[in-house]
Amino acid sequence: MSLATVDLVILAIYGIAIFGLAQWVSRDKGGGRKTSTDYFMASKSLPWWAIGASLIAANISAEQIIGMSGSGYVIGLGIASYEWMAALTLLIVGKFFLPIFLRNDIVTMPQFLQQRYGPTIRNVMAVFWLLLYVFVNVTSILWLGSIAVNTVTGFNQDYAIVAIGVFALAYQLWGGLKAVALTDIVQVALLVCGGLIIGFIALSTIGGDGGAVAGFQTLLTQFPEKFDMILSKDNPHYQELPGIAVLLGGLWVMNISYWGFNQYIIQRALAARSVAEAQKGIAFAAYLKLLMPVIVVLPGMAALVLAPNLTAPDQAYPTMMNLLPVGLKGLVFAALIAAIIASLASKVNSISTIFTLDLYAKVRPGASETHLVAVGRLAAVGAVIIGILTARPLLGGFSQAFQFIQDFTGFFTPSIVVIFILGLFWKRASEAGALTAAVGGVALSGLLWQLDRMDLFTLPFMNRVGLVFVVALIAAVVVSLLVPPKPGTLKIRLDGVSYRTSLGFNIAAVGVIIVLIAVYSIWW
View 1 (spheres, rainbow, N blue to C red):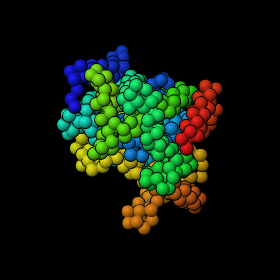
View 2: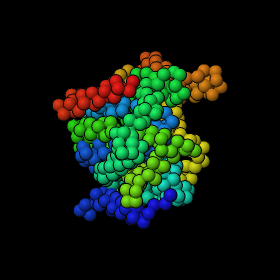
View 3: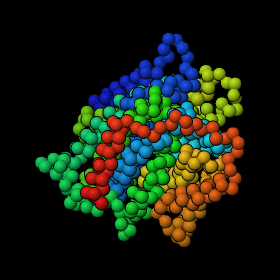
View 4: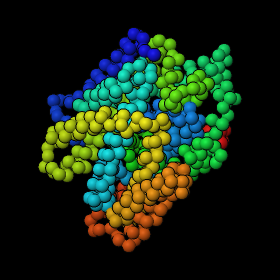
């Protein structure tokens, strides 16, 4: 189905407005030129509302909206554990990780690794993150975003990939992180409103005269198994969400890696005015996270009634959009595009940050600030071009792209969490131990994956993540005890670091915990 003229006008207004706003908020004031701190870290002056909104905008994109709606269609509400447990993870990051990062003026995650362990682990992980962000994150956003555009408008999918990539690049190319973060409050507001609208209309369509409440009750009655939050072993989707592991196992490792040590996520908090400001932003993001399942999972579940014969689960959300009347469809479609563009721009900015500051600047230590900013922009252009060229070849054959992304990143996240947790909280951890965790964890993940494919040792990927984490942790501790840190590598300062948080943060944390207890008690 094509968009009506009024829908296209709304979409065009959004595109022009958000592009103009991005350029305005990131303009050079007083005739000065951008430094690397201005471009990559928004001058380290982001307020809490920008941090919270930008965290969610960087996270919620095509792979979340399209992918999780598709998983909601297939698996049900259980997939929402990724969102709800992330809210609690955010609070842990704000309380325990951010004070150390900000005390040491950390700009990138590889920079922390060098200060803590040495240059080798920094270079290894910088290259790894670049490959992951370009070939998994950028490509997935482009591919799933193009599915949405094609399903709703009929626009050629390959052309959609190019259009999304070019606009996201142009949107943030001049202003860097400031252009992204300071406009994300608009993007998130549009995303939340659009998601609530589509969920309400979908449920109201199911409920008829009874409205959205009756529609939700119909879903509960017709598909009670889709509301199980903790799946039993006889559930056909136990491999994707293995029971209690979503509360006590591998999901914690996935979430801590993503929210605590992922450059394109944590970069927003690292650019805060202060620790207190960053923590307020984190709390704001946690509450937005609690709302996300209503926006990204519920429409997919509604499609069980309204579109029961979809050829691919990832068509669920775009199909629900076609229920919307003229005008509203343009608004909701603009919200979806806003999420795609904001998240893609965030990833591209972080790619340019790591490439420029962690790799290029080390090769050219005397490069000027202007030169570094120019290199960062070129790196952003290169990342988008690669993503456009490889999106279809890499992801075209997967029906549930969200599950593919989780499974793939699960190869690496156990090692990442081991390296950072030991680096943050155990002085004896050494570079040799960190490298052992990095190489050994990936190797063990690959071995277990191959054994699973050969039906020799079947293990749900989330349990695999938990098992590899434990093994990598033990290996890193043993090697660190045998090969202690090299002199001069422990450059992380802990003096002045306080884990005490404000009353407001503590109240917010208690509120998140109460909501989670209620949700899991109702739909256990």
